[in-house]
Length: 462
Ligand code: NAD
Image (tube, rainbow, N blue to C red):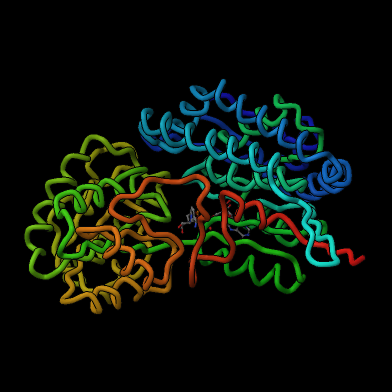
């Protein structure tokens, strides 16, 4: 697989300050496919300096010209979609059709939405005798995870560029090749030197150096709640802006009036997509006691269809972690009705699509984020009980409600402590704000709400 042996800083690929490298592993066959440089604080410092130097020019660039560069970036992502899909498949392990449709496809939609928003957003408004300007926050330190390698990058970089900010990106160590491809695309799109910079490296080294750097005005982080908490504390101590997109443990609430077969089928598909490595996955399925046995049978049947269709988990570490959770579920008394902890293949980080029945709300598998292809069916007695269970975790990222009509589902969804809810199978909307309540995070990504994260206001009185 193609890999750069340097960092993309100030519009060029430059040698890394140190000699250490990170091995990129294909999770399907466990072979090393490339090496990328492991950045140090020195690389981060060079990248932040380049971003600071480029800031005044980019911030002063007319929004229409910023929009044109983002549109050009979208066009490059379209032109190179096959290469992107192949790269994501190689380093994340996602089946190629899923990489083409989702991993390569969604970033095109998001980049396109920011090309339009940059051109149409009201960066200036009149309020009484004042004019209020929305100005860029400054230099953004973006730290992203591996689960949707390109989407997570575009969801930060596109709005940052639209706002007039400059960026230093530190992508996940498991998927740096997609990030290098993105840097090539930015270059090809004619974004001026220094506006976007890439430093590959380890989280506790390069990531931490970026989060702590005095020259960074906003840290935008997506990843685990444990790391997010540290980054939030660091940013708070420096009175620096911070946006955190963290973990989830979302509920799929099936009310008795719903189409049970559809709700269960879509619910299982939602978790199996990307092998369960989706922060907003509906990993807890809540079913009324009168329909519980039927739902368990339907879920087991639905999961079996994914046996040969899902890819592996991203790494040996995640493989061990997810299998550990499955063992814990069994040990705590949940009933396995599909899959299990045993590895289904000799090679690769595969986990069988797994369904647990008889899960109670306090079990570890119902409280902690597993980040694998595991669904837990939980029984409820009435709507208040369902709401208590749905809201009974530290997370609040997403969820689903199914009912005979939308109004009934909406009434329930409005009582959920969570950032987004799909009603009766509602489709993904790249303009809808995405982000968490409670420990799922601070701030929103996507659409105009996502753009606002990268802006600060100045008011002039007349
Ligand atoms: P992670 O927190 O380990 O890593 C995320 C990023 O942070 C990586 O780039 C990593 O290198 C970096 N990092 C690690 N330690 C750091 C440190 N001390 N300082 C600075 N940066 C550091 O998470 P992960 O395992 O890569 O991703 C899985 C987690 O991400 C899951 O919990 C998932 O729910 C969450 N996630 C959330 C969203 C969302 O939008 N809310 C989206 C995707 C993933």
